[in-house]
View 1 (cartoon, rainbow, N blue to C red):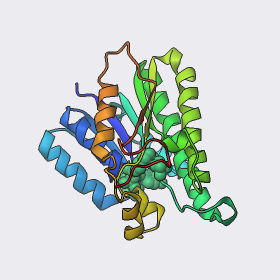
View 2 (tube, rainbow, N blue to C red; view 1 turned 180 degrees about the vertical axis):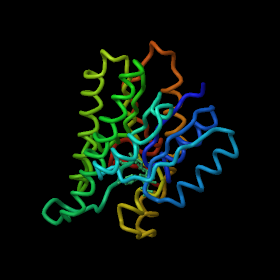
View 3 (cartoon, rainbow, N blue to C red; view 1 turned 30 degrees about the vertical axis):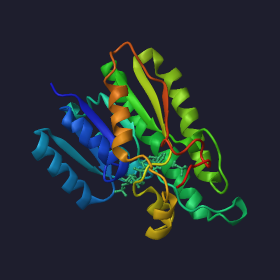
Length: 252
Ligand code: NDP
Ligand code: 8X3
């Protein structure tokens, strides 16, 4: 029977790249995101290309009740999730703490921390029933360091780091692996979302360096997931060659 991966935030960037690599390797997929048309387009493409089956789940990970309803409504076959990739996340704004937009703070905390927790609570219980599973949490260099004006986004990713360590302890007895993947700069829609559609400002984030691409991270995740069952990679910090720390970047 084909294995199943559940990926949140599968309509773009790292989540979409993960959907590709898992589909290529024969996994059936539960893909979660808010944008219906994009999710349908990606799903149909992957199903046609790799002869796998995809369950599209339109959900906002912040919405605890509706998220739970739509996930628990999946048939029991689809709850045999082998790999959960907690990827849905975002940054909003880049302002000093005294000027931060409190709605942006709520969005980041609700998505990156609370949303990740809601999904994990549901899916970890399925994994416990199956006596196996692997949870991949997408953290960040921003969960290892803080940088000017990164304040609340960095705090959410530090929380993801703490939660990955906590999950590894709490789920040990259930034979569930937990891996934190911490990327540096990856050129996706991340900066366009952070700067609320300002594509030029987003482009400038990556000016003069070769950033990572989403496939680089998906490739690392596939490496982590494809280790033998007795091996777990606890965490990975993956940076562009041109980036030494969150702020030290070698630009041409
Ligand atoms: P993208 O903006 O390209 O992708 C984000 C994905 O998350 C989209 O598919 C989006 O789908 C989904 N998403 C956002 N909010 C929600 C929500 N409330 N409910 C469900 N899905 C949601 O960014 P990336 O691929 O770069 O980001 C993926 C993860 O990687 C994030 O956690 C980010 O913090 C992390 N990361 C990114 C780095 C980078 O430099 N790009 C570096 C380190 C970590 P939709 O809008 O359809 O819901
Ligand atoms: C995204 C990378 O450096 O903008 O997590 O925080 S960074």
